[in-house]
Image (tube, rainbow, N blue to C red; front, side, top):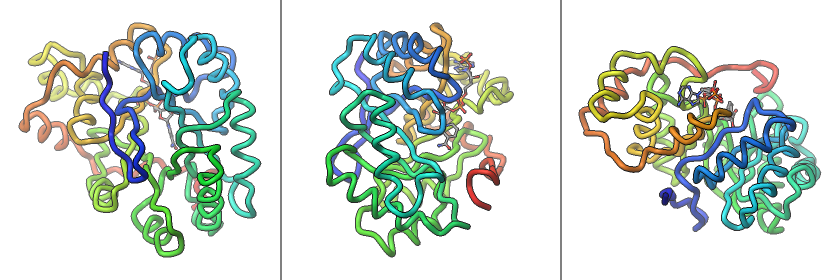
Length: 275
Ligand SMILES: NC(=O)c1ccc[n+]([C@@H]2O[C@H](COP(=O)([O-])OP(=O)(O)OC[C@H]3O[C@@H](n4cnc5c(N)ncnc54)[C@H](OP(=O)(O)O)[C@@H]3O)[C@@H](O)[C@H]2O)c1
């Protein structure tokens, strides 16, 4: 199976679907990695905060795949913001993963109340020049955060990873990212186990295409140029979620799915985003 890639603004490419790894832990991550890589995944999303990078790295080695065939994303959270702390953060990630580099490193949350994401990004720019990270991006940044970042730094983030599904479409954020050449990556693309997958509109479109509701949601991401990172620890669902490249949605399907938007804000976690 060939998975399409999306071009990033730094000349590199990101596979258009990845495997989410939260809330896997070190003990269960290795077997899931092997299953996913055998199923065809080449893009894995992890983070220092997930506490699973040792297991993710172990599973990748267990799979026997060459490192350069994979696209690995990690993220640094608040403890690594400001004062060049990201240097130690990336080293910790690489040590845990057992890798020489990650393909993409993200600022996990902007934490605007701390006002440190600009200086953290300047450290990220230096880390990219060091070769220990190929591409640099952000997560959970709103357009105002990106405006502020762009005003004080030179490298435009390659990606912005945000909560996004047919019920939380965030069209204005995606339009902003598109206008600035930033690839939007969708976290919780399946609604994180909510009743999104039971929606009757999804059921109708799924029946029409002979696909599952999860496959329809993920294909909607693909049609919109987004990069979904669904998490599953189940062998059958891991395979199901990546089996989305043999059909296409109609413009009417896409519009019906986008119309499920509730206008809901993304999850606001006062512990981590500093609000
Ligand atoms: N940047 C951030 O701040 C941030 C925040 C949250 C998440 N993330 C990333 O995004 C990834 C995905 O988000 P998420 O894990 O929150 O939510 P999600 O991928 O939307 O949903 C995962 C849930 O859906 C189930 N599932 C998976 N495939 C399914 C299918 N085909 N049919 C029915 N149920 C299915 C999974 O259960 P099974 O495992 O049993 O299949 C799991 O309970 C995370 O793993 C993480 O890597 C990033």
